[in-house]
Image (cartoon, rainbow, N blue to C red):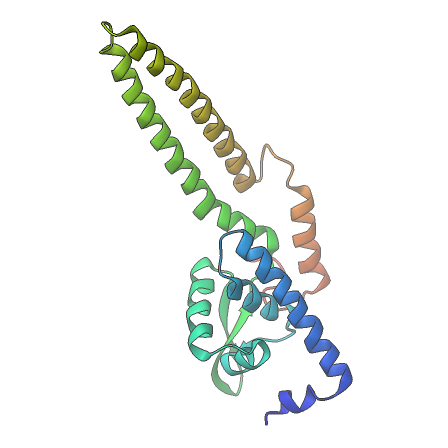
Amino acid sequence: MTEAALALKRPAAQALSRAELRAADAVGSLMELWGFRRQLGRIWTVLFLSERPLAAPELCERLQISTGLLSMSLAELRRWGVVVSAAVPGDRKEHFEAETHVWRLVRRVLAERERAAVESALAAVEAAAADLREAIAGSAGDPRLRSMARFRLERLEQLAGLCRIGLSILRALIDGARADVGPLRAISEALSRRFPGLPGGGPRG
């Protein structure tokens, strides 16, 4: 039995572990709502709450997950840039730490996923609108078809407008301009100032 496992037999340590897992499960559930796998949120949270970088065996032990699941999840978290490798002097095992700049995490997801999804939807709606304009142009002898095409074109233009508004909001959030992102930034910066010794604490380039 490892030293960490032995320590967890003490009541105070058990309470610490219980709090960590509750927070990890809560963040994991939120991540699921955002379209990510639950384990990604759980792993990130344990690293975020840790005062030091953690190696894979300890992460598996804390979260009670398999090495394979951890390895796959870490690879995805690293692709998003929310978990990075960290060197620990005197220890050859690879260790990991969490990105703690919360606003940077949100902005990265908005930029790489949500914006791409809205842009794709807008392109599809605009292509459908082009089809309807073609239908209108070729329906001079069919008033009913022409009316149907015009009605649908009007509705599609409303959808396209919504997509453009969504893109404007996303771009404003990503750029940090034209939208009030003060609360998110304040939380993120407060975390970095409050815990300057945490992995990832303080501003990064």
